[in-house]
Length: 162
Image 1 (cartoon, rainbow, N blue to C red):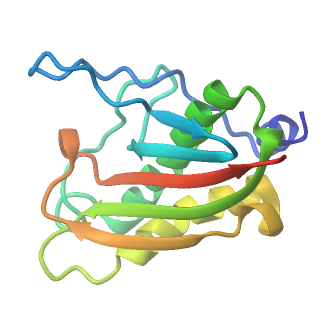
Image 2 (tube, one colour):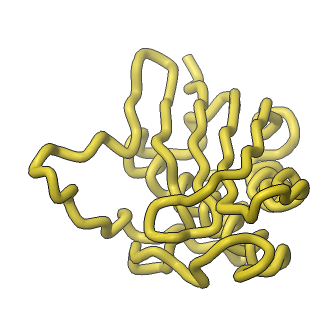
Image 3 (cartoon, rainbow, N blue to C red):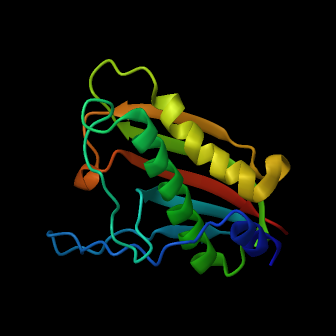
């Protein structure tokens, strides 16, 4: 319950399960989270509204979505990841470590500040879990496009307590 209390202290609310339609191909979508032993593998998450719908604004950073707004999207993506992980493992206090975060920014060609966008994701993780558990290796890549035109998508690997 410590992490839930910390979320409340920070005024953060986890969104509902992502409300993404099934793929047109008729195949099943991948799981949002896969738990293998103590490893928690999290599929790419974009920013979500409290009801689980994708959160705008949509578009490319920085020509359609300014840096500050893209950072807000990264914060919402962090909350989306936390919500999905909580549903998968039952209790966020089970998280022993954030291992790695892979972030993608829908960026105009040549945009060099993808790390500044993803810093907002990392800040949420550090604020909620503290430096010891929340520290993680991270990649911040610019992408030509992202699903639904969201400005940020983030995947992660976490480790559970034994």
